[in-house]
Image (cartoon, rainbow, N blue to C red; front, side, top):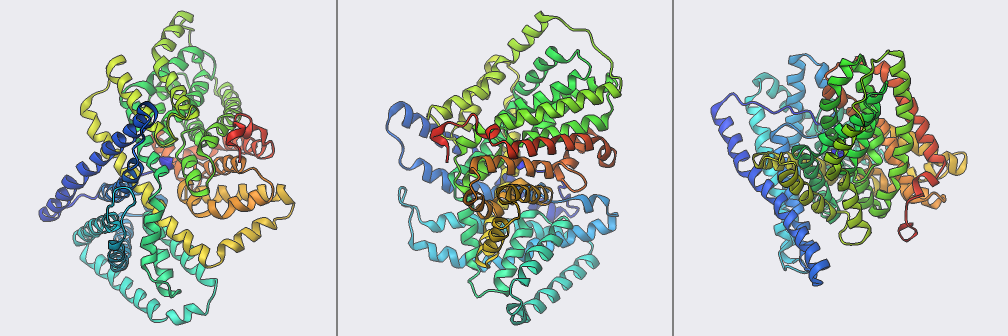
Length: 628
């Protein structure tokens, strides 16, 4: 991320006009340092909370409240950084295949839609801001309007950046797109009385047609959700539009979500400190000499690294450069290697501290600690199946063998990698012993990684700290803004009655519990390929989990099946964005990987079905005290 995980393709806009470039640089010069500082402040607040609660035995009553308030500011400023750098999560398949002229038109539409969303929402946000001036936070006595100010500042800066891009565009294209947008918006608003009589057809028009079209042409998912929801509220309902702002704020004002930026930062520290590379080298020394041994190393490395960083794109980017050169030298075909990399990423979606697991816990109320336990064994099952296919593939490709370096070399490599191998155990010890929560434990990992990188490996460069913090804010902002707008969209779907209809359809699936599970698997695979794990779970998790629970399906088991199914969709061609990310990291065209990935995907589907219908695999390690 699960970066959430997502394929974030950087499309940073380069301004030609000096004045536009100057404004863009000024925004970056102010927002990026402030957002980076917020990450550090959050780390200090959580570390202080753990220390005072566990060591001093006098917990800080205000720490969680302040951390939650700053999280909203981090989310909004991070979304500005992501927008400025062109790193908001979006479906870019059509953009990549379009001609330069068509791509310019699509990018102009994206900027116009973003501007429309902000312009429509801003008056309602100001109204909500005034309403919140009379409310104060319980511990710090801070006006709630100061919290909402974060949304106003973030939206205003995004609007400025969108207008700058439009000012730089081809005047004819910009004028045509803006004119069309004004005419369509005016016509829809003028005919809102007709929409009121369409009933649930409006759900298809606004949340399938409009949102789907926006996502398909490359508009960032967060803004696609936002414009669809706000348009629905303004045109179809009589609800005040400030409810959208309120739901966006509520969606991000959850302390559990602070784990998103902190685990992203932890993953970047792992890479900069040299921990991830040494883990891979230790595995390679053990089985790399076998035929297909490096494929085993690739799967095992994805398992170990995923258990630390939580970001699948970061995992692939860390593992591939270390292993791919040797795999190519031994005769393995690059498309097959990328296929294994992609499916390993899908398998690793259940390995803690996966961001998707954290999101599920925050939106459904399922214990995050229980999910961390539950995801380990299912990933082992899928890993074994992937390794079996990889070994079969290696024999067909006649991969050359290497000389075993000896057990002494293995022992040295394992000893060097030992600090990295210990880190997942340290993290889980702090959670299990109740020393830190699933959010606070990320700080433990950050401090540990810094100490190892500075004192043990002496590879961490302090000059890399600020870029890592800025990268963290960009990815976290992109993810958290999706959660904000998806929360508002989920509220609209719930109020429309769609939630109950979906729940009824799932509850009456033929075949009872088996039918519900199969229906859910298909649904989550589709959602994972189109929306990715985080927005899909924010939207549909609160709707589907109660139905599964009512049918007698354990919520923890259902969560693991859902995450794995979404992982399959995320990394499956032809539309899974994770599949395109793996192709880009492996430096091959996606069409070259489509055929080699088929046997690996089949192996994942077999593993998914085994896990779905053998609940013990998910629940074996979960302590009874955490069981729902």
